[in-house]
Image 1 (cartoon, rainbow, N blue to C red):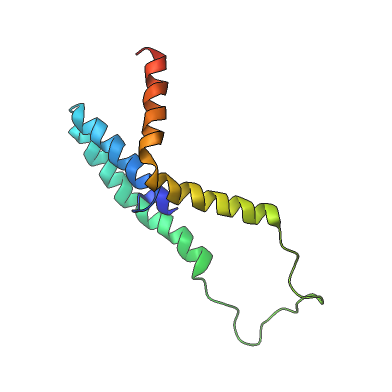
Image 2 (spheres, rainbow, N blue to C red):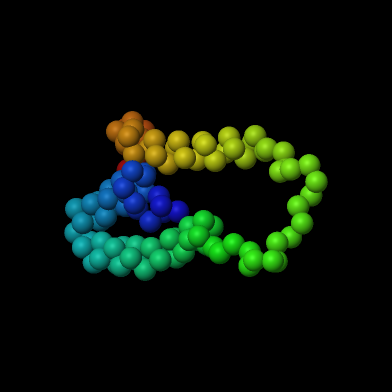
Length: 113
């Protein structure tokens, strides 16, 4: 969600920066303004998802549900691996921008535009 919003230390920051820079260089400054306004409008929606995931109130006192005997459920290694990979890609894309841009430039050049 932070990457979608364009927060620093995520690939979303560079993505938004390069898209807005390309639009400005093409003379479409109005498109940059629309993009920045759309980003500002979407920011509360993205942060609201994070808020609901991590900052929701706990159960009211006395209304706790019974827990199954045997402790917590077994760990799901595939889920842990997917979350770890997502974090590595999101934060790692901030530090390895140039190779990603090189691949994108080669892909565009292969189109023959």
